[in-house]
Image (cartoon, rainbow, N blue to C red):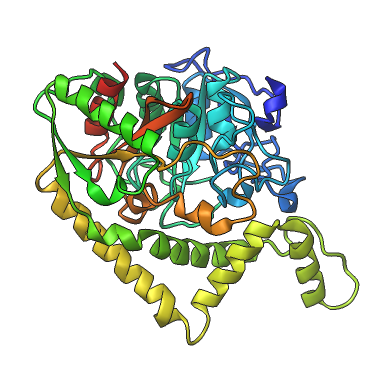
Length: 424
């Protein structure tokens, strides 16, 4: 399966630990630091960067007995929905090699789907775990913001992103989440929730009495085959004792716009450190510093990264901060409020993970807006800092369809229970 281009660095690191993940191999997304093992973020800028330390999640998986199967391919700096913006070439979807695996954690999901790793770590800034999980027919969990340490994750958009597990089954994903969840002294955003978690035991499929809310805004306009698979999954949950009702989240119509303004603004700030001096591709030492800085970034960054940095810098610039960034933050507050109101009446929210089946390779590269709009169902979750899981819910034309289940803050047990019922 090596022709799938799953790994940027195909190198195994054995664990000396002994624990719940003993004997398991984990593909680690290439924006998560691994001591002594190259970490490129899918970018030419960091093609020779070798971190001097392990991310907290990597330390924890090693202590639990898991080995590292390699560093998984990804969209450059996490910026993409297809794993085609990687400087190391696109990853192919194991289900259909003419299709993308989703992104930005496409290499991680493809590794699990193809059996090249038992489990995988991804990161999710606007759907980057759930999208490839849906496109590759595996399970992906985006945890509540603060449940899993981000120490050692190369930052794209700090206020949005979370590291999470990808696995073949809900129970395996939940058990992996148990290993990596909990507070970390290196990350001030982490919380006590998850310190002594037992999410794996929640994967019991018991949804009797569960109330599911279906936001009409996240179903309307989706591909016909995706919608059909979605409603079939809801019907199966009803047969197991759950009930559903339609709810409205009017603010999500503005979620994509708000997300991209906030994410690109944070990316502009975070990627300023890549100047070719401290680390990264050198711009040379002739001429003045500004010329060297510009040359390093011109050669080191791909087109999508440049686009997002430029747009983010523009949104933060004098005269435009209030016009764009402040309004995006207001929209974010509105989205959080809508979710809070919805969860006053329902236990979980459900939608198709992605509104479309996997794209064909190359299909969306010439139309970035199409790629951005594909995130419509996933980005609201990150803006509201909530947990969500994508679980396989059938097929359309032989391609996987994912069901997204969203929970209230730190409601991982509820969404895991519901996801396991879908799986059963």
